[in-house]
Image 1 (tube, rainbow, N blue to C red):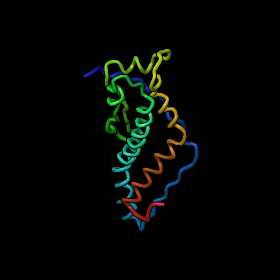
Image 2 (cartoon, one colour):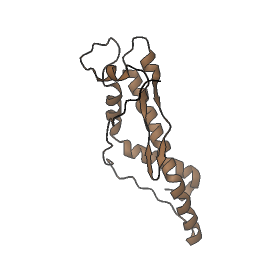
Image 3 (cartoon, rainbow, N blue to C red):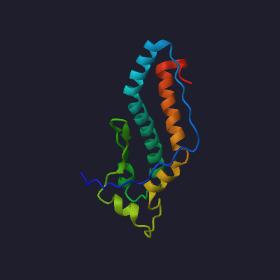
Image 4 (cartoon, rainbow, N blue to C red):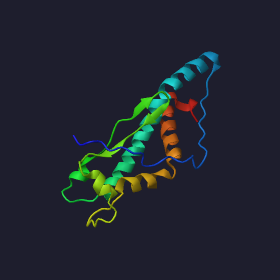
Length: 150
């Protein structure tokens, strides 16, 4: 297994529009159950939405990945989210021993693809990412709580 090369590619900017979610409840008992359930499921639901976002980024990155043998492109993957407390992390990676070189050497000439293929895809996805993650999370909550979520 090749050594994993890690560095943050992008920082997510603040939301480019307000996303409002409302959950209604009936009485204090329902409020308590909803609040306890929400604290249990929210990090995982957000992590699932982030994973979906990562899949979209990886799809674009693969389109832009230089191809010689196809090994680099086929090694691209999104790892399952890791949730620690209220934080979620999703890792996107290309798993070859030469991925970092192909990604970082800007003056290389490629007949297919380009350098910075993963970084460019991630940066392009930033616009609207917080709102998309919020909408995906809201959809998960609507599936769970129905019309109580608006």
